[in-house]
Image (cartoon, rainbow over all chains, first blue to last red; front, top):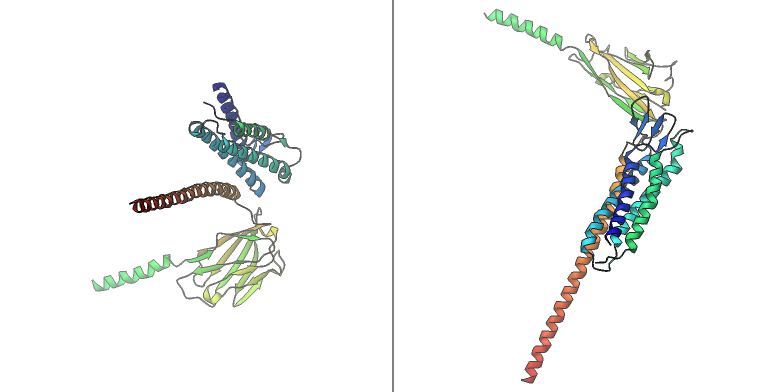
Length: 154
Length: 203
C-alpha cells in the first residue's frame, strides 16, 4: 500500500518537475549558436534579449504556466483527499486537475509546433524544453488517470 | 538712500527678466502611429514677450539612422512654406495658429520610412534664444502587443473560471442544505401538531 502511494507521488512529482524545467528553461528552439523561446532569445556570444511578443508565444507561455498551477493544485488536493476521503472513495478531484494540467501542456506543445514557423527562422530545430513538454504530457495524463481509477483503502 | 534703492531695483528688474527671457518650445516626446494614418505633430512655445508679427516656426526631419536633418517646413512673414521636393512632398499640411503660438503640422498617409526625429524651432523676435524641441515618430505596421498582456489575460480568465466554479459549487451545497433543513423543520412541526390533536381527541 505504502509502495503504491510512493509510486504515485513519484510519478506526479516527475511530471511536475518536467513541467517546471520545460517552462522555465528557455530552450524551445535551438539554432547553430542561438536558443530561443519561451522567455528569452539568447546567442552564445551576446546577452539575451526578450522573446518576441506575438500572440501565439504569449498563449503558449500562459498555457504552460496554467499547467504548472493545475499540477501543483492537484498534488495539494491529493494530500487533502488522502486524509479526508471515505474508505472506497475515488480521487476524482485530484485526477481532474492533473488531467486538465496534461491537456494544457498538450495544447501548449501543439500551438508551439504549429505556429512557431511564423517567428522561427529556417534551419532551427526544436530544443530540449520542447521535448520535455511532450514527455510531461503523457506522464501527467497517466498520473491523472491513475488518480481517477484509484480507490482509497485503509 | 532712496535714489540708491530706486537705482538697484531698476537694475534688478532689468537683469532678472533678461535671464529668463529665453523662449521655451514644447513638442511631444514620442508619437506612435500606424502605417497609412495621419498624425499631428504639435509645437508651441512660451515667451515673455508678446507674439510678434515676425514669429517664425520651422520643422526639420532627421530619419532614423541618418545624421543629417532636412528642413521640411518654415513659417515666416505670415506665410507657410511646405516641403515640395523632399520625402513629405504633398503629405504635409500646416494646421497651426501662429497668433496663438501654435506651429503644429499634419503628416498624412504615413509610411514606414517616416520613422525619425522631428525638431521644431520657433522664434519670437526679439526673443530668439531658445532650444529647439524634438519629437520622435514611430510608425508601426500593426499595433504591437505588449509582452505579457495576453499571457496574463489567459491565466486570469482560467483561474477566474475555476474560482467561479468553486464558489457556485459551495453556494449550491449551502442552498440545498438550507432547503433540506427548512423541509425537515416543517415536517417536525406538522408531526407535533398531529400528536397534540390525537391526545386531545383521546381525552
